[in-house]
Image 1 (spheres, one colour):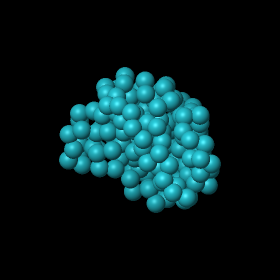
Image 2 (tube, rainbow, N blue to C red; image 1 turned 135 degrees about the vertical axis):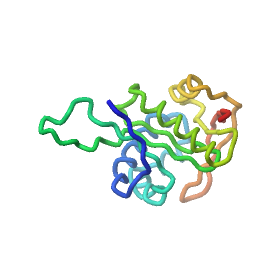
Image 3 (cartoon, rainbow, N blue to C red; image 1 turned 30 degrees about the vertical axis):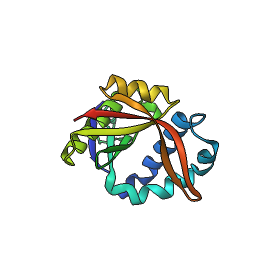
Image 4 (cartoon, rainbow, N blue to C red; image 1 turned 90 degrees about the vertical axis):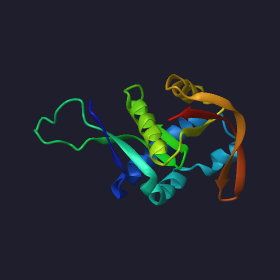
Length: 170
């Protein structure tokens, strides 16, 4: 399988929203306040992605086997990352691509973007109970800098979410 990174395009909205919705529930259900879960509907992700397209980098996985007809399929969006200044805001991989190396490629790209944005240290927030993500970041050289409440904006106000701040020199 070949993984290619590229800026997201309008045609990626459905794929990014589906990966984000599914991945968000995998990592957050039971780890964030129920009030926030009520706001994180499929519609929330679908309507929120278009405005974020300029900040999204997608990982496209080419099929592991060639197309029998000899034509390339163009691959599929296997994951994405969003970087805002020095913050790695979002990193998600489609369930079928977890464990394939896509996450490592995406986090390395996020670190590169933070450095290109003029920062020496990157940071990200991970829900306290999201053990799988926390292990991944630690294996990737990130350091747990401690617990804090991450303020998440919703249509009805801000909800504090118990998180850990992870940092890494880039």
